[in-house]
Length: 421
View 1 (cartoon, rainbow, N blue to C red):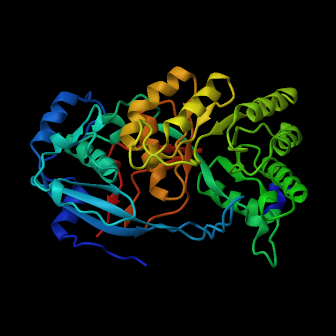
View 2 (view 1 turned 30 degrees about the vertical axis):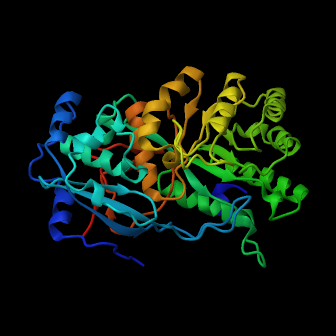
């Protein structure tokens, strides 16, 4: 089909009005940010030492996607948006920083009165014994105290215009099950995100895992891919099978979509050397230059004793690096927060040395797109970021703009996202 033819908000904890005012303006003690002044890490750390935590509050926020989103190969329909807890830190000098920090209740009392400099170093990130739910809030707070955006505080080695793909193109064609909407529904989702500024789409494939027969599902995957490539010739197309394919199915898929010039193929099947070698050979036979992306899904957790990759086990990440060494994985899509913001800063040189890029998994919260973009602008080696279309009522995202498929990083301090009263 040608595109031309296709045409509960709950507050947890008590937020004072003073906190919200400081959050909006960054605190009275901060100098105005300047893009021209080099960042002085030593000076910034001295300023952090002057601030102590006066309060840590929580607030529940709920994302709203622009449409009801369907299923992927292995899950149920996603719906309209998910909730999360924002953690809001206010210092004794009136500066407030915040960010999303998990879904569970937390006890802030051990940190009240602690100097920010004892918890965070601008060149390294959070201290080792600081819990993960404070990682991104401390990045936002430290950058606000230093009066710089996070991307500048952590290095400024990447681009200011960060390429973003829409990660919200799910299997709209297979729902509702009693009256499936067909390929037009997938094209409609792409059209909506195109008008929102996206110029790259990640299509969910693997319909034969649970939504159709194996044969019919693979044929629909191929048909959807061709339809999107034809309808949006100025856009990049990525695909994600959520480990639903066999190596035979993945090989047929790349053979029959070779004319689509796919940007990447993500998690075709559970990562292993033999199958990925066969997939790479199948791609080479048809001249496919698509990248192979892997690393989101973990089958064992390192929650009690985190590794240098956070909640991923060493066995899992060692296997990814072994595949990269064989030239069988090009991009690591480990989750942004399972690894952790501080850890991403520390391990990225390992990926560069291994010759692989990163694109941290950011689904399903809208704000994680902005956090990942700041990481990309700060440490580099992240050529494309997962976009989660939508908005978060109660959060002002207007410092960011989308232009020709790129999210433009702002000069605003911190992550550049402001809580509204």
